[in-house]
Length: 191
Image 1 (tube, rainbow, N blue to C red):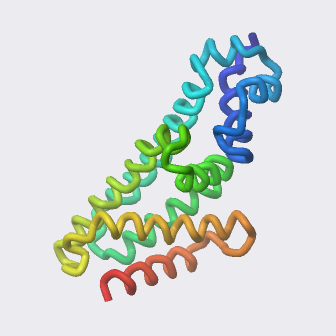
Image 2 (cartoon, helix red, strand yellow):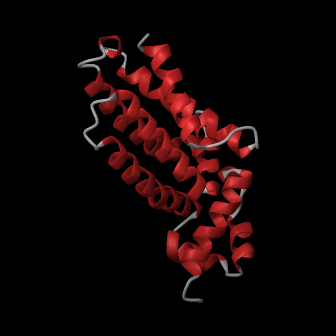
């Protein structure tokens, strides 16, 4: 067993899952791509689902830490806070292209699928963090009061739409795009 087999399995599985989706990739395909035997995959992760969970855990921990840091700056200017959050997502998507593409596909997985069932708890954490941002903002932006939950979903939908367009070569992930998303969101929600 090679010393870096675990990392190789994680890397190749992420590549395959982002290209084909979790349910379309077999354990045999993963180990063949890595050049190890199935017992190696099962030794490290227990199962394909265990591998799936580990990939989500590792990558979402990084994303959640960055999102929490972006939201925890004590910014009272909502537009600046939202622009900072959008830029954080853009930066993460740039740095983690395969994983973010996979996030986008998982967010649209059929509700009864294994992908939806396993990934939902990880997606949910983003919304919880954003709900806190909008709850704080609702103290001064009264039109947000009682709409924090919906605001978090709509805001993240705008961000993900831009990132999805970027993947297809139709948009940029830059400061101007981040400010535009914050403007569009605030105009639609608060105005």
